[in-house]
Image (cartoon, rainbow, N blue to C red):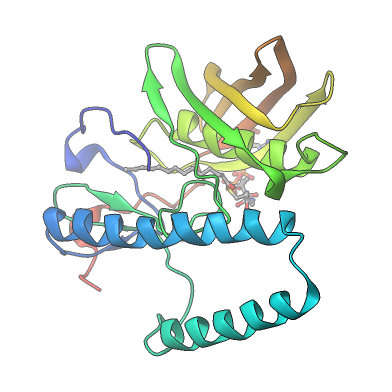
Length: 228
Ligand SMILES: CCCCCCCCCCCCCC(=O)SCCNC(=O)CCNC(=O)[C@H](O)C(C)(C)COP(=O)(O)OP(=O)(O)OC[C@H]1O[C@@H](n2cnc3c(N)ncnc32)[C@H](O)[C@@H]1OP(=O)(O)O
């Protein structure tokens, strides 16, 4: 669910940990849309479950119905997490990602947009992300900022890991519509210094700065990856 800037030459990319998978892009797009549709409904389910006031008997009947649906999904499963894959056109997909995964109902999902100064994302956080009453959980704020800062640091041309992440919670972040922004402050060798914020309609609620590091020896030429 991340918008893509123009691709650099494949040989210029550093994609440690990604798995080369030569599924054609139209097929990736088709399957992603199918799984996103399911995740959207599951996300609705999570919100509905949190906020339901139906009686106990109805809750138990719904639970039993859902257990049957889980069994149907379990009929064919990946052996582990979804991972991150990319094909020869550098179409990347990370359907299980906690923040942007198309198949992950836990992900809001964040739709990260690359812009002239870095990245931004508009998101609406509902009851599933609550910490203090009516406010976003501080760990959720950190998770979303970590992701958009990592995407900003990687700039779709290198792999960076979060080294240090510092948060300043200036005031409570209300559930509802929010805007995240991130930009690169400076770079020193393999270290990328990123600043970011979350804002509501009244201004910034959380500020973050982080050091994202391109690990030594993690540069992997995607041409050398075997199809999986
Ligand atoms: C097409 C491509 C698209 C890609 C899109 C991807 C988007 C993904 C978005 C995902 C977003 C989500 C993102 C996530 O969730 S990433 C998941 C959370 N992060 C981790 O799991 C990272 C775990 N740690 C490590 O892997 C290593 O320790 C790292 C990689 C961090 C460094 O290990 P490495 O062995 O390489 O380091 P080095 O010892 O050679 O030191 C190198 C320099 O760095 C300095 N340093 C070291 N550690 C830290 C530190 N903790 N803070 C500050 N600075 C540190 C050090 O002093 C030195 O500086 P200098 O002396 O040179 O000045």
